Image 1 (tube, rainbow, N blue to C red):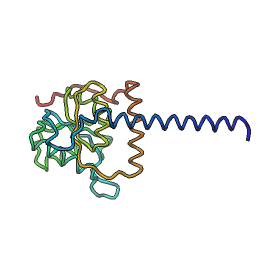
Image 2 (image 1 turned 90 degrees about the horizontal axis):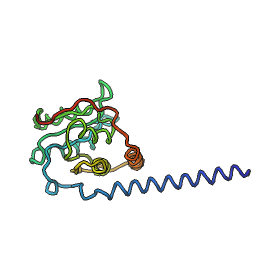
Image 3 (image 1 turned 135 degrees about the vertical axis):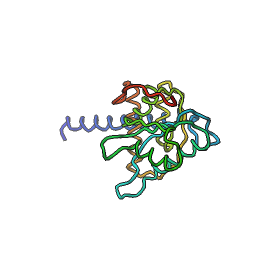
Image 4 (image 1 turned 90 degrees about the vertical axis):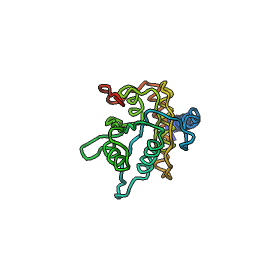
Length: 213
């Protein structure tokens, strides 16, 4: 085998090892740094004016309900009805006229008995980073509660607190993760670290929205 091929294999191996170590370090940083600000029961969770509910699709490709979605709505309902939060800010993707996460979440939460006037919508929550930054930059919230599954809130709380926000989370009931979802989350955490180091901003900001006024 030619010498240049051996060098290429060597450097590719070193690059792969370094990338793997960086992904592992990013994952560990996200899981542990702000773990004390994540809560798993209503009793552990303090009172907040606003809960930021992170969006996801309502239905799976086979038409069945997405349990990530179902459990997030159950968590949001429990927080509001227990008096832990006064307002819900629903943030998600509004990529087309046929797909609107915030609007769908609002419809289903109103059906669960949450007053429509207590719900605000963020239509530009295309990524977790966008949702968290926009919660402060557009909706004026420095202190807020984040609602999603634990693997997701770990990343969201990390973003918020790294950027100086006083955010905590209430973790919705978990769902068994597929290997593909597990790998996607590890890569998302690595990408999050790069975004924070590079100062990446949301795709859209826009005019201020005053919650509760």
